[in-house]
Length: 387
Image 1 (tube, rainbow, N blue to C red):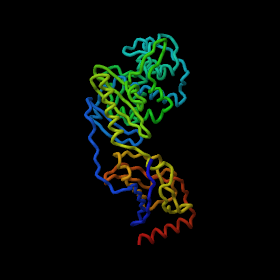
Image 2 (cartoon, helix red, strand yellow):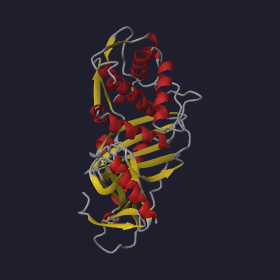
Image 3 (cartoon, one colour):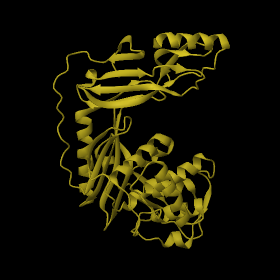
Image 4 (tube, helix red, strand yellow):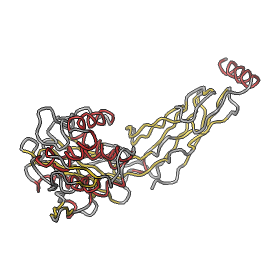
């Protein structure tokens, strides 16, 4: 956890500055080894909480995502569950089209009714293409319409180099994603649906008397790994999105286009080990808690507590976290009326002069406009301060 904070306050040229120093020692030289050589066409390593990029190569290159597509398929279904549009116990009638879908299978049967929960586990754990199509048809009426829903979510999440044409990841001319986009998707999946993400760590699933194992070999090799998905087609090569949590730090790795199932596991493990070995992530400030107090003019009150809308996590090289410095700058002249959550400044975190993080400072309370006397008084004070 973050160290106790030492705070000093000052007023310089009308701009209120809060300077928070986490330095407990004189800063030493900062050296972080380069990321390991990764035998993949592209890769990406992301800290889950801080969103700091720890390593990347050709992260925006558009590539075939193979069964990594099913992360988005699951994400769309999870959103439908959250919205109350379907339930885990709801029965899905398996169509001829779903049953005929090639590639990996859950082995559902035509016209049989299968629970949504079973289909989700069949898709996530067994990578069943038949389960993916059955879910898509049930949610949207057709796989094509479901793909439209997938693309809507990709756009909302900022996945600028992704386009989906099916729910399975089977080859299609205009079906692509990127290492960066898949990391963003995995981050959203884990953050928004922890209650369903638990299925990703399940090592096997039995349906219709057939037991199949999860293809994520890291679930057996590394107890800190708890998801997400593997994929393979001739076009895509062997791909993998993995996530691991050690103590309070979670990382997401993506490798695309490796040579074998063993290679994708090895390269993913190498990236994760690098991130955990050379970096650390801690919560620096808690969202919704006062970081400073500033004057607000023309309001029913003259003081305003300011802070962050959300928790701020920061990633830094190991053994240098205590050298972080945070400076909070509050806008000159904060006036009522003001709504809770309105931006009134910024918090900037640096390490050895380099920017690490920057977040908006927001009002922690709403302040209504004051009466006539208060407004006139603050206007007069403002004129005097300008002179």
